[in-house]
Image (cartoon, rainbow, N blue to C red):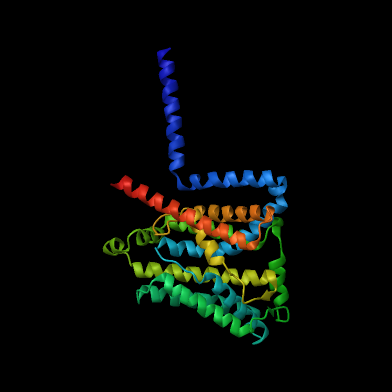
Length: 338
């Protein structure tokens, strides 16, 4: 009898240890509020879990989610990029002008558009790495440059890409919906998986974490932190270019106002997803959960018929809460180390 009681106690303790261990996993803690939000959304509208609605959420989150992946990598190294939204607009405009006004072949226009964002992100990275200019100030300057150029090139008017040779193929790609989703969604999920593996299973990923955690210590350990910081800006530039092409293939028109607020959405999703805003901690799975959570919140606000201005207020509050949680997480980690 005593043995059976002891076994039950041991089983209960083992169960508690497993639960405690599970809750120590950062992503598990993020999933809980997501589940709460889903329950709220279902209460507000039972059709929330309808496949068509979930498909809409998937398509919306994947578009700016591509940008959020790059933002997440940059934040992991302890930097920020505030220019990603403006860069998307400028790149869409550049592509449209290259294809319709300069009459460049579609493939060349696509390549040049991606090279443009890679170049712009590289410039930002070099200013941060070589001149030691704060990434926040550097990318705000890049934001104004991109906004000004995109409006100058279009006279603040939309540019149709339909007249461009080969545009039918691009637009067909943008309008396709395999499994009721978009190709962008599958690209997005694929890239999340790829970068999750890179961060967790490769030397390069470990170097990213080390650089963001403590750049000086990482240097002493022989890590080329300048290269790591510059490389994530370059990767982000490529993802911005990819997002721009996908966006214009879906919309069939370039607009200088595209990407407005994407940088804030990306940073908020990254913070909610558990990537430390000070760098050095987090994962791409967390970013995925953060993006999904942001999209659910947007969906709930739409269901409640809250206007766009108030949605911005909610986004700001969410960012403050995410920052507070990040600070508390870091204090807890430092407390455990002490």
